[in-house]
Image 1: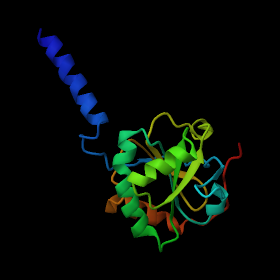
Image 2: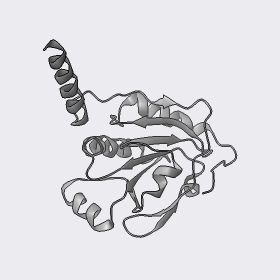
Image 3: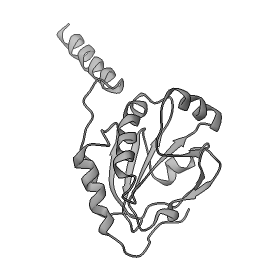
Image 4: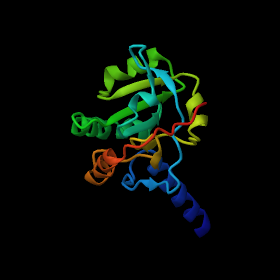
Length: 181
């Protein structure tokens, strides 16, 4: 009987954490080997093509998200605040929506403000290219095109600790190392 309660309690905690009641982790995982970021070319909401190589020379926050993902929705306001903090600093935020069409995202935007660039990956091909296993997953790419940090799950992206880590990457300006598909 006690074992049943322990299992039920553990399942309840897991459920609550997926619903966004848990405190978001603020730590980023630093990738010591700093792999080259996979190149992509994806359209934005206005159908303008963006490639990751367009952003070489500046740090980029690349986040994979979907409109049906509660933690993705919960962290959107912090991305908006981070975007406002970074807008004059030559640091970009790219939100790659996976597996949804333009109409779905447009409807979503009627209820949720998104103040950064949304890119469409309707076939969710970039999840595999970036070795992404869950949503939201976010990568911090340095000015050289290397992945320096990764975060799976919700974060407060306007947290000073995170913002300062991203700002510190502005000083790396070496040769491009993006990987081709």
